[in-house]
Image 1: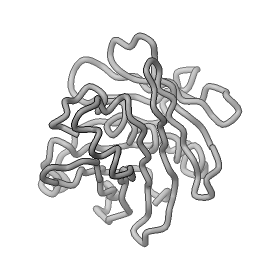
Image 2: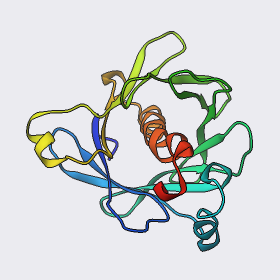
Image 3: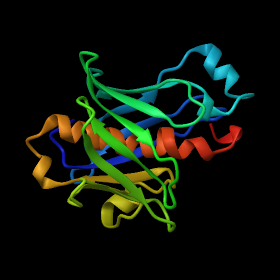
Image 4: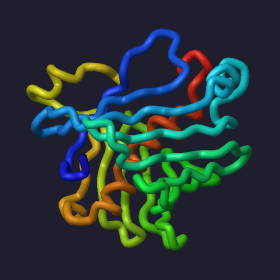
Amino acid sequence: MLEADKFMVKEKVKFFKTHQTYDIFDYDTQEHLGTAEETISGLVKTLRWFISKQLMPTTVQVRDHDGALVFTIRRGSFFFRARVEVLNADGELIGYFKSKIISIGGGFWVYDKTDKQFAEVKGNFIGFKYRILTPDGAELGKVSKEWGGAVKELFTSADTYMVDVADDLTDQPVAKMLVLAAALSIDIIFKSESRGVGDI
């Protein structure tokens, strides 16, 4: 999965869904690379109908097309600022995200496992557009719902978006993992916090 530099992430359509599941494709070849799926207990699924999702813990497992675990995104319960951890396939912490106290366009901070700031995810007011930037302002990746050509004909859902990882990260699997995890967290964890119960 991490060999790709451009990803298309498409939410699976479900009725009465209690958790989110996405298919991950190679943007250029349209090859199915794997899935990202929330794995939560039955109790949490039930409580989500009555309690705000943002107050509940969640775990997202990202697996390749053979079912092997690539990395995990995990958030515990919180009431003020969310901390979202990213774990590799062996369950080791490789980094984490922390929500901003005030964010005009949306976004959050990205740190590596040594608590050093790795990047900032910055959004804007118009559409689903985010940039993942280093502290020096270099672009590590971008996330958007803008695409065209044959891919546009294949993916037409509003819950489909592209993740474009910078070429500089091609040979840096841990960095690429953090960028892809950050992109998935925008929609699955952080952006979903503002949705109503019926959108869970």
